[in-house]
Amino acid sequence: MGRYDRMLFCFACAALAAPALAPAVATVAGAGVVAAPDTATASGGAAASDTATGTGAETPSRRVAAAATLSATALATSAAAGPLVRLPDGLAQGLRSGAVEQFLGLPYASAQRWQSPEAVRPWDGARAFQTLPPRCPQSAAGLAAGLEREDCLYLNVYRPAAPPAQPRAVMVYVHGGGTTNGSANDHDGSALAAQGDIIVVTINYRLGALGFLDGGNYALQDVLQALRWVQRSAASLGGDPLRVTLAGESAGGTVICPLLAAPRAKGLFRAAIISSDDCLHDVDTAAEAQQRSVTLRQRLHCADLACVRAASAAQLIQAGGGAAPAIDSDGLLRDYAARQIARRHWLHVPLLLGANRNEGRIAGPGFLRYDQQRYRQWLARLLPPEQAERVAAAYRDEHAGEPHEYAYKISAILTDSGMRGFGGCAIPPLGRAAAQDAPVYLYQFEDDDAPQGAAGGFHMGAAHAAELAYLWPDGGAFAAASAQLRPAQRKLSALMIAHWAAFVRNGNPDVAGQPAWPSLRQRAGYRAFRPDGGGQLSLDDYERQHRCELWRQLPVIMDRGEAQN
Image 1 (cartoon, rainbow, N blue to C red):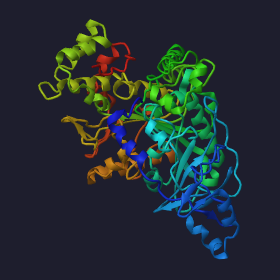
Image 2: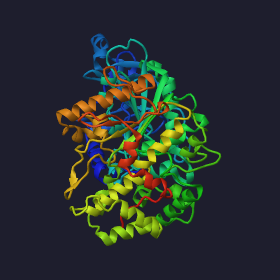
Image 3: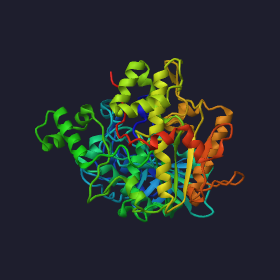
């Protein structure tokens, strides 16, 4: 849940600056004007200004005139420009990339600032969706460069190019990034679509204060609206609206967890994949959401909320601060989702649930300068003296005497305690609670040599978000990491994709030729994913790894345990 954290998110920064996959097609045969998301928004936003090319300017009127004079030859050959589909909102042309067809930057909603999203207005003629859409505001540089804007409620669709034998299952993916960073563009769904024979939809949603100010939960509403779009549009894309799986990692899990217990989400998806989130942490109470608003006003030197609402997107981003879904007794998030699941007040859909073996190491580089004194001070911030002593004793041998000993100890405690909600002992209780009502398939990613790099000699191992290069290889924000996968890791990547896609298709992750993956309802353990095979292991093994007997005896830590200077 929480953050890709700064180290991993450098991959996404590179993707933000990357060029679009392909230029927009100028016209579509007999269908009128084709426009990319940044030249005509389709969601009711303003058109971008005309751009100069050569000796003249390409304007909408010139493009209309060109469309009116298409030759018979152009009409006959336009299909080669990319696949054409008639969506409920209008005619859309994508592009072909190998064995996959892509429709990039499709609008799924429009929204005024701090208002609920609305369905897009249908468009006339045909439009090309062949370039990646703008990201939602998250950086001053991205806003200045035009790579980010508030008109950002777009999604990307990846589907196999081969005609389907039957309507394909659909995975709707919600990106991570601490609810302040990330975009649909980070996750290239080509490999999942081609290898898994599914349709992959990756979505943008509003971030930071623009997505969560004053407990508005606008980002959660965005995801709901995207799911409604999928229900309306799946059949047009060759998909099955009755087989939609909602998936998310890290903050993506934080955003979708409330929807598992939201009556308004009933019927919009039939299964869910939650990676590195426990449906408990990184959620604000109403008082905490209000305090975030107060802090934001102070940073903007505003006397009231009206002043905040008048601030530019750049000013809001520069003011900084975190963001989180907020509990609202009358809204989408009526209580912590984990509590609602434990009380059996949720949608009772199959879950694929898991995390990474060394989740907390994503934060390890922030603790490289810690010595024993600072380590003990860190523990004292989090726990009463007697409990802090018990934890110190339990982790005494963790990397004892090695370089960065205390960074490793703290990383292990961050993982095992579940204090950030993204792994360790936070995951099995959620799985057991959900298994009262639905099949739950538990996993842990355990590749100790996952390509995340190192910081000052600190070994990242299977840290938070390390699995993303395996599930989303060869494109998007994780292309650089996936390019480093060795042959055995490539095989692991293919195996994980096969299991994830099987879950999307069938509601269970069983793969032909692989051992059956029993659910927690069958008193099963968890599936370990390692290059050496891993396999099905017992929950006792899992809980010994993470010292869960100790953590069950201690109160849940809601503090994130951030490093302090």
